[in-house]
Image (cartoon, rainbow, N blue to C red; front, side, top):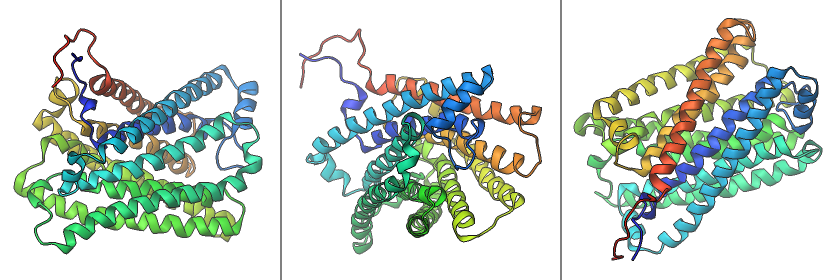
Length: 403
């Protein structure tokens, strides 16, 4: 006899997105500290900056710090727990017939969710270190090369998986089913490359070693370029298939995968720009940064509108979010909301405020921040809703015979 199975009991590599979404939410809480806690002389706030702000700050700032630190701790823990669960389940699943069958279909691209989640978790661990570990900055120049090695290894895993996939479909005619390409699901490899690239770009923005900055610039450019090229090809071919066959309903959330791509590539380029400015005397004006971020935000708004329009017409939310149907691909809904939140924080502070279009803490400023907070709250509610749908076993379920 066994209890009613959970949806997550039937494993799918897209469950790695549960880890990615929680890690992304940890980043949204870090934005509070990034832009509200003073951190003179450093590109990011660290434990000492946070404790100083707590000591001297206003009650409102203390409240924001408390919320941020609690949110980072909670969602980083959920990120790591989901990653550990996925790695364990993936290991067992990879020796089954289901895995072998998946590697003969278009869905082999979903295997790139694994390096994507690994890269997200390394980024989350770095945030945990900045926020909770005293004196971390004193050894950060030692940590940067170690972090770059970790990201290169994750990137090598991503290249191996995508090389195996492309080698199969490009060397054999008819190995790719265009009728099943009617979504943006094939952009997942680009997402994995971009996440690896943005992690590699961090030392470019933070290190004071020209050698470390140079290596970070080159390596992050490699993965950022791979993400861009793959995304363009996948977008064009997928749009052609969707125009012929419509959008696959269960994969409809992938229509908004361009949104997190824009955030990750945008931050990657901003980190590179900062490294070029500080270490190699390259300069970009505040106005140029404003326009740069406005272009990326514009792309996000367009793809958010496209995805939400199609999903509303198909009744996706009614069936898969608020209804009784489940799909592991629903976790892809978390990434766009998180990514829009993060890039909008950058647009407001590094774009509008830096270019003196609006004043920090003015009414227009808080109106835009309210939009970021609304997106964050909606994604928190969505994560907990999806976790209950997929991982909670109904307490009232009757015992049924195991097959």
